[in-house]
Length: 101
Image 1 (tube, rainbow, N blue to C red):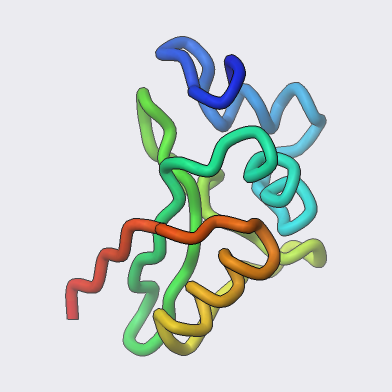
Image 2 (spheres, rainbow, N blue to C red; image 1 turned 120 degrees about the vertical axis):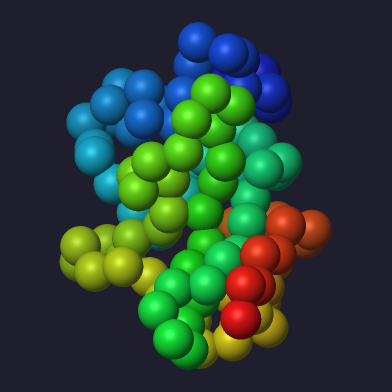
């Protein structure tokens, strides 16, 4: 990240690699959110669940959704619970919401 805005050549994957991780864990997401509040999203996952993540300027990969610190995908059963997590844990107040159901 360059300041609070991601540059075209600086993706989340590179940010994670610099920190020795392949997944955006909850702890790393908190660090990333302190650097950048924009680009966070909530989207559907499976039939009745939601995940949260962060867009990169250049590309999207599965590394950009948040994983629990135990290696399991962090899932929510409603948009509201995902929104509460983002607000309480990452201090992100206005995520994009994609609900294709």
